Amino acid sequence: MESKDYLDLKAVATLTIVTLLWGFNFLAIKYSNQGVSPIFASTLRSIIAFICGLFYCFRQGKKVFHTDVMLFHGVMVGLLFGAEFACIYLGLLYTDAARAVLFLYLSPFVVAVGAHFFLKGDRLTLPKMVGLVLAFTGIFVVFRGRPKAAKATMFLGDILQIAAAILWGATTLYIKKFMAKRVEPIHTFLYQLFFSIPILLIVSIILEPRWIYKMDPYIIASLLYQSIIIAFITYLVWFKLIHKYSVSRLSAFTFFTPIFGVLFGILLLHEEFTVSLMIGLPMVSMGIFLVNWRKRGIAV
Picture 1 (cartoon, rainbow, N blue to C red):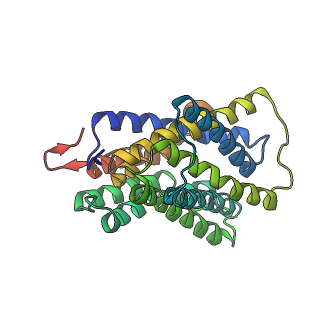
Picture 2: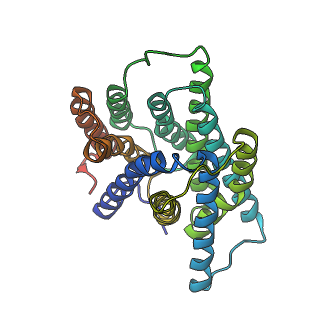
């Protein structure tokens, strides 16, 4: 299957739903953190999603692991993914969550620049670069402001979040370069989850002396949402998109995720609807429009 250099209407609709679900995931994580330590919850999420993937393979009659060089590439993808989440959670020990989101969404820049140099046909054009800068500026506007009680170690946390953004971008590029059109998306999905589990578990053992504080139906529902809806369904859909479409254009759409997260916080947690959100959301939307602009108009 040829990789498309544009996003058609189906891809745009799918990405909108995926980022909407990812945005709601911020609330699910926030709730599950009341009863389960975050890194262990992430490990548990990967285990449950991997089991779902196994059932998917068995029902489709597909093999689970390759026995050639694709297995090596699968291990690399899993290690990159696990290292990314380790950096995210370690960084959150030192920096503010809003700053973490801001730095994490440097990833589309990593993908755009990397795709320009390492992927055939995914060039970094002027409209695409302007769109990325505009979308990132919109995120910055939404999450701007230094915390009132900034810690001296905040810089370390920021560096770890930047490292996570680089790892996220590197994972996307690696999949597109070495695995797209060579393996099916379900295998990319399974490799990423399976080989990341040991890293997440080790980090959890080191940093989290206690894994479960309390358990109720809502926490269980939150974990199942993170595991089945997010880690299984949306990740599998995301990998299918990576295999089929331009990764730089796909990554630009992820800027919607923190925006949706803030909107859900306003609607469901009654958080404040700020002027910065009213300014930042149109900037993100226009930025994504420019990233997907073509000479004949936006590709839908």
